Image (tube, rainbow, N blue to C red; front, side):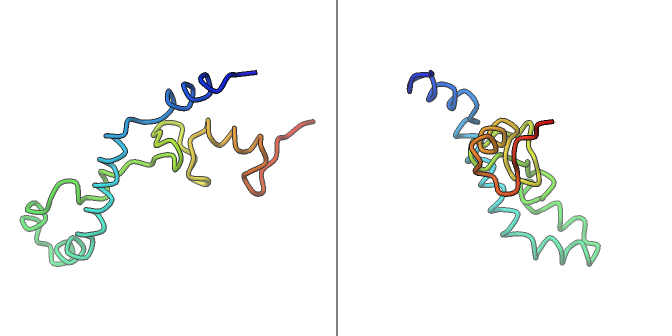
Length: 103
């Protein structure tokens, strides 16, 4: 049985840095803020105007991240979680429609 300290250390090890998560949320806000302007400039073919927009307002710069830990690698789109958190939650029966397979 793992102690509480070991569990906390394990969770902290798998979490992304707070600065990385904050940077991602800032990018998401910029993408939402400039989405209409970006679409209008693209439709008009004004590529010089597009260059004047902030780089982080481009949706290509967004990265899929786990909703719980912020981990970017091993991300499962269907569930919005990293493979590690998905496995833990599925084992506990907290992901609807998913159960451990056995044969």
